[in-house]
Image (cartoon, rainbow, N blue to C red):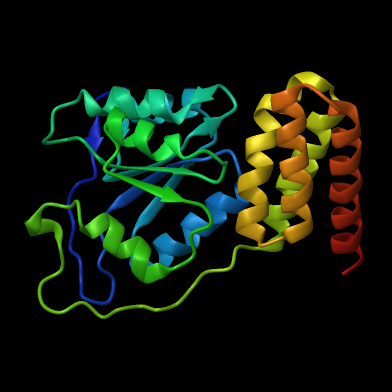
Length: 240
């Protein structure tokens, strides 16, 4: 008979070199490229990682397991990550995970909204510093879950696998090919992805796509330009 009780993962045996050892991080993120970045950060820090690509998947996961840390993207295919943060913030503080909101989309109000909903921190994309990631989490852990003694600072940065980037680009191209209804979801997704990939051309078309979505003008031209660059990127990567 399956055990339906919630399993807490708030036991840590952290060391100065692996300060997040014993923790479980749930990353709620629809971008495979961004998820890969968090996975690498966790590996370097000693934490385990689980992934959910939607609010639905995250809630299903949380019915069974309780992670130590939740990294929540604000723009998800079935709603806003702020909704999940609000839900988690209502829980008993003794089992409430550290909640980190993240986004790569434009908008100064996102951090304020996430923190008001109960997030402990807002982490804008891109993120790649192992040291910064570790410190962000350690700042909100109970004292007995932190490593004893001086911590060895890891100044390494992570570089996600380009295959994950290709998967995201292919997914976005498919969505844009489905019509104008995809714009509200694709535009902010592409903003964050271009920043994570440090791709200036992709960033330029993502801004054009966002502007077209906001103003309602030139939407088809913006989609055409965006798909053209995405397909160019995919063709180049296939040849390498």
